[in-house]
Structures are given as structure tokens and as C-alpha cells.
Image (cartoon, rainbow, N blue to C red; front, side):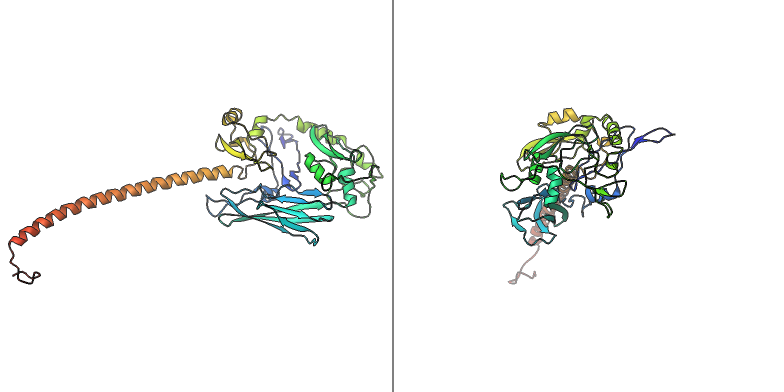
Length: 418
């Protein structure tokens, strides 16, 4: 929300959908004149970090990645390697919550992975439960949508759509004519379902096993309004209360009988232009992002900035994905992120809990060692004092014993003096 003056306290307001395939993807930084809010339900579901039984050991955080969209018959590998814990995750458990008897579930050589095959059209739900070394657990749900032929038309055959906004975001779409995924620049709003962040995601959705492509008819998708039932949240509601599938409004082609799907489309462009013209300090956005090891399993040494510690720390980067808060050296990290503090972070729910936990653990260990040293010194001093006292008493007793012997005469029974 952009704050205004006393007469008009709200100059402009922008509403964001921060979920992409069931994963929270927004990143906010502070800026003078603006205030950011998040729904309590969104915070509790995707951002909150529940405190552990002690301040040292926090519960793990299960992460199964993005929801998936695939073709029938394709093998899907589910992975929980992005799950986090401040110590160690000792167990990964996958469960299929939906009833699809034909699906085959197999473990791989990696404990966090599950291979699923023989998929038929439908919506599959899988539950990942992770357990840490203290037997604390956390769970998350992953959805795998296996497309029907009709759904494949919307995901893979819909024409490329830039949209009414005039941003410039690299995306991928499946070209049904060339039978391959191609990149394009997306405007930033009112996308259709044939819109993917990566080439891999596009290929996974619109191809089948191996190098064999999903053969789709090249004629245009036939889109007509559907009337008689209430529209779902994913559909566009025409002025006559009929429904269109997601993404077919503001595409330059009237689909509603009354043409309402192509009206007022310029308002999106105007609002979006105001949004992208807000100047943002790039280093704030980069240096306040949450440390992310990425989606691959390599081990590359990188550095990230922690605004709560005002310092850079080493971490193992997986080799792909992640975010921009990664640097090749500690010096480069400090040079770019100098001066960035927690005041520049809008939402910080345990973002840096690992480094904080490690710091707290180090402090606790140092205190314990200090106490142990003091106790040892006290015991050592007490032992020395006791030894010296015993030595003095021993000398006194021996002298007295010799003097007593001179004044006593003993019988045959040595225990009784005369």
C-alpha cells in the first residue's frame, strides 16, 4: 500500500498472489512511503516458524518443492532435499493420500526421494513428513496433476499470451506447431496456463517419457463460454454469469458472448505500470533474501548475507535455482551488502533461524565452558587447601605419637598399655 496525504491516506494499493504452485514466492523489502501486509492465514500456512521445545533445537521444516503438472504415463521423482533443520533430518517419509491403485511407488538411493510411475489422469496428493534427530516432525502436501486430453489443450495448446501489462519477464510456453518449448517475454499479468518459469517445467508438462513428444493437433483451441453453473475461482466470470477457463480474458479475442472478457483490460496495464515504476534498491532485495541452497545436489561453496548479524556466512550451494543472495567470496558479499540491516526486511519469520540457532548454540557452549572452568578451579583450589591441612595434621600426629611411645610400657598384648 502506498501512503498518501491526510485527505487521501491511500494513494494506491496492490494485491499480490504470493503462491506459485503451492509455494510461497514473494519477497518484500522496506521502502519509505509504503506499507506491506500479509494475510494471517497465509503467514500461518507458509511462513510461521513454530518454536521448538528449547531455544536451541527448532523443529524441522518440510519442503517438497513446487506442485507438478505432468502427462499420463510419465515417471515423476519427488524430492524433499530442500527440507531444513538446524541440526539434522534423520528420516523422510512419503505417503500417497489419494486412491490411485495403478500408481507404482519406489524408493531411490536417496532417502528423501520417491519415484512414482504408471500415472493416470487425475489429481494426486502426496504427504512428506520429515523427522529430525530430536524426533520433532513437520509435514507438507505436494499435488501432482496428471492431465486429461482436455486439460492438455489448455496447458500446452493455448497460444502464447503476453497479456495486457507491459512488463518484461522471461517465460516459456509450449508451441504446438513446432512441438517444442520456446521462450518469450511475459507482460506480467492475466497469464494463461501455457506459461512456465523454466524450460524444464514446460517440457515436463507438455512431453512424455524419453524424447517422444506429446503429439497435439495444430488447430486452434476451441474456447467457448460455459453457462448454467457458478464459476470457480480459477475461471473468468462473464457479465452474463457464464464462465471462461483461466487465461482467456484480455487475449484480444472475445470469448464471452457479450464481449465482457475484453473490456477494461487497459486498467491492468495502467495499474501494473504504476507498480513497476516504483524504484527499488536492488541491493536491499538481494541482501535480505533468505539463504537458499537451490534445487540441485552439487556442493559449491558460496556466501550469503544475514542482515540480523550484519555479516556474511558460508553455505553449500546446490548448483542451480536458489536466489541472488549468494556470492563467490566473503569480501564480495560484504562489499555489496554493507549497511543492510533487519530494518530493511519486511517479513522475517525465522528467515535466518539456522545461523541464529548456531550463534545461540555457540554462546551457550562458551558459557558452559566458562562455568566448567570456574568449577574446576574451585575444586582444584579446595583440593590444594585440603592437602596442605592434612599435611600439617599428619606431622603433628606423628610427633605426638613418638612422645607418647617414650612414656608407655607395653605388655605382651600390644593393644593395652601398662
